[in-house]
Image 1 (spheres, rainbow, N blue to C red):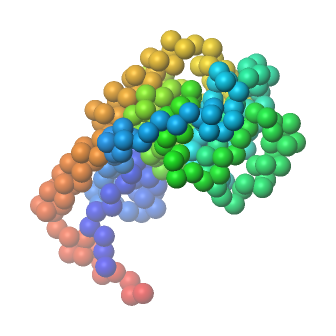
Image 2 (cartoon, rainbow, N blue to C red; image 1 turned 135 degrees about the vertical axis):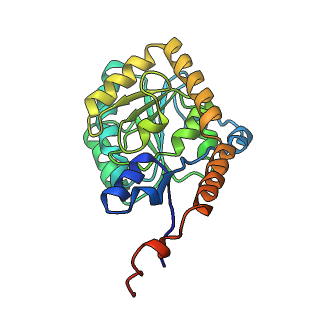
Image 3 (cartoon, rainbow, N blue to C red; image 1 turned 120 degrees about the vertical axis):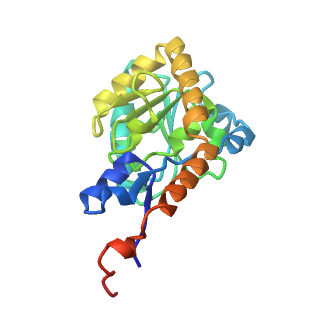
Length: 248
């Protein structure tokens, strides 16, 4: 059967479909929404206590599956540079996946066992995330990065790459800091700068929270989907205007 309308989680995904030959008028972007109530309801866990980190150590956290497109090796390379400047910094990576053993090997080779912690899968990831000082995202490709919406609702300063749909969510210099993908040194420099500037951390976090509430709530997302259906109701179906679907 023909698809009348593709709902894309970001303009980056929409562009990929158009590049693949899907007619632009059959696509629309509806950004994922953040369930603000779910974020509010998650109890805050003290990441220092929970993972035995030294009191007062700044925590840079990441929540993502350990798969290639999340770019963790660039984050670990960045960590090596960060701890040269900020020796008490700790990196906490929450998630599991096929790259776990190679990331562990990299951590060992760079002598970062004390500084980079692989926390594995945690059902309470959001509670842990609430006590990160910074949220870091090292993706090399990303549809949108809905975990960033959680960080924004928490009011957490973000350092992320400019991959895929991320710049549609994080406004560079306003609600977070964006660096080029696959660039460990740039990621490290941004993290070090932000760690040294608590005032800027607070400013970015507050602006991020405001942005997620005004533009990325689940209510807004549902409204956009309903609007898309309304528009669709007034247009001919794909089957009417396109050639019949190939069998198979």
